Image (tube, rainbow, N blue to C red):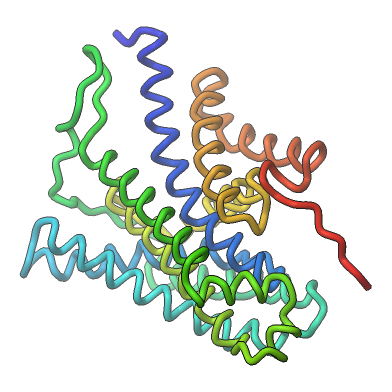
Length: 304
């Protein structure tokens, strides 16, 4: 039997894993919003597409290569595919509307989400697809008699941490990252100074989409199933995480994702799993009422 302490410890571990998924997807939300002030509601569907590409490539390679190598190759394939998909969506659907009212971009984002979602739904006949990764889901580090942190969970958290640190260094240290920060402040002035704004925006979409693909691939391996609707809820949860941390703030997206996962886990333990989504979106409502700029967000003054 699990003691109360062990139950909460297990829920905290589960919350850290789900929070890692939320954080990676929330980073894409915050990157795109920070640079062009767009809430890209198609981002959750790109996460879903990454999971399906990982599923398909791993299934094809497991017969030939097998083992962790096929998973790594499947992850890379998902990242490349989703990066190209994000760039294509930006170029075809969003770029013609950069100077249009924000509402037009928002409606277009919802339309793109429906297109991706329904395309996958048709291709899979709305079925859940299951698979076995072949990895050991039981071995790990034991805490006490009943709590085990599996090696897969440790790897997932380490991958998430490495990507977050790498993205932070990229944004703060490289010329591309400095260009992204400059465009987020004043896009027109950046054009006058010779910065290729469209190229930088395209790169932002590609990086955000690749991060979503990593989250989708990790979810595919961890839960051993994929379905066309899996991007909807996590897209909303990632948006909630971005709002908690401060939409447009990359450290805020990281913090918000991990915090939401942990709060969900604790709330689920006390209220029951059926209240999981209610609890998460209740946090979103409370944040929008009492701290709409988020924990690390900054108040912006928009000049007309």
